[in-house]
View 1: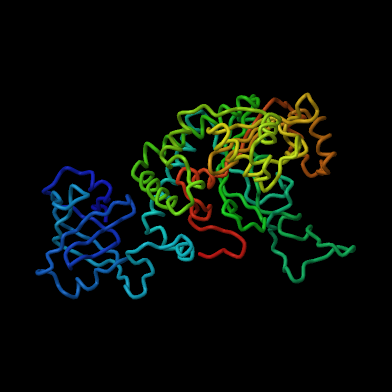
View 2: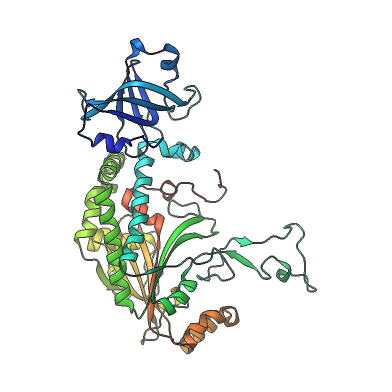
Length: 478
């Protein structure tokens, strides 16, 4: 088995005239003579030339689209267009048959909706092969970025008793008989009898636990699955997704912004350097898709240009207050073109507002800071004006918010006061408050929804297409 050479390496090889072993899945078989073989290492197929006159007819019949085969043959210069080498087959083995009458991925264009229904097979298409190789590179680059800077990778719990966002949209974890849970004397569910002795849920964020690590290890990051039970069927929401959440001791809001911008640029550059072929393919795919849209809805830049643009430009930094003024005076707001009108200070910005700032006004990525404390979470550091918190959101073209973060409130009295104001029980978060009681220091962090990053770098329009097996309302297939 170990003799196999991957197709990506073979296509880059200049050592012709030697025997090689290649294995993969048949994309097409033309004229009983030319097999287009792919093994997932690249979108490019290698051509296998079959001596059909001296090959068993029963074997030829089994070389069908989707079949897995092993080929031993001579690597020779290709006379055909599009590749420099091909394999002249000496021996072909069928490793796994594929019934052409039943195999759903025939050599034709399939809609993304159809491919979501067969997500177990969609990896075999060019589009999804490219997406998941890019996703792999981005994940590797995230780890490399933080490891190069001396961060500690911390695994925060999947099952937790806290709801970090205070959103309440959580998946509950229990081993009770749902139809007949034990009750207290007052008729409420008695969670003391549950597996963990209390009500628990799947995590919505590893941030609070991440802060505990940062208060001893200085710089940590988490990269793991998180869950939201919102009944949302949009192209931007998933019930299960991956989050990157660094937390840094001795950082203020400016340090936080600097790190977030550096990280985004680092991982995008890594993908451009290491997945050139895949990103070129996805750029072409997006260009073809955009041709179907009305002129005014088409992007001004290609995918490749958009990615390079993020690397070449410093992100525009401005306060929420400045952004509100720009939006209030904007033509779409005055002409009531926004779905959500911007009335004034205190408005919770929607995706359409964020995208206007990025795509129309500044024409570059934007970092917004100093949001009203009423629309942000309890743990964000309160500014001296008494109205705003040291929050920051990074906004990207086509996506809107891609990163949300803040300097954390390290002052115990301020944090407790804010928790009281919005009704978060202090006794449940005693462990979190302890970090403010014992050696508190300024610290900051942010969260990046990994799928939104993959969405941006691949140019896809639906977040369900950038995670291998999407989980959303009424769907937990595969």
